[in-house]
Image (cartoon, rainbow, N blue to C red; front, top):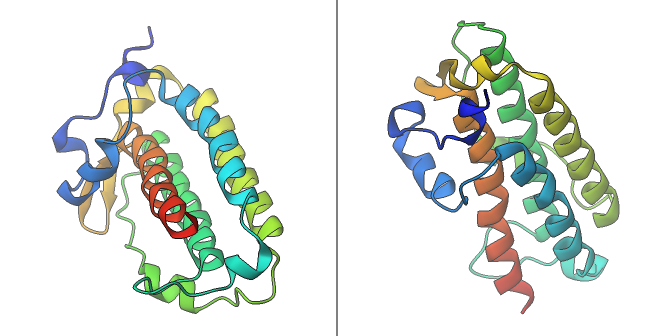
Length: 174
């Protein structure tokens, strides 16, 4: 039975502000969507020059390198949340402050191509994890940043979050 994988998360499985990300995602096997998105973000990000990746485009507050770093951070954090909850670990998880995460790292040194590899590897790691969890784990949930989030919702948020930022990046480089 693959019901948990194929069902979209219900509104009670995530904080309301994540609905904008989840709404961007088509129906289907979320593992396939996670995998398919890898080539999409690699294609988009690989078209950006190193110079362009380090420029701050008003009105945005992050360079494209910083945005890619943010995508890596969120991929790691939500992958960890999904991992904990899939193992039925119900201890609450603190939230993440995205501004602190981005400000805490130097994005002038790494090449954009290295950040793309890190994002790709982090997504692949999450994908391999999502492929090995039992179907029953998709509906398990825990508390992160004071909000309920299911394993299924975490996977959808990962795809929707990157989709959201790719839309913005495409506008920035157009």
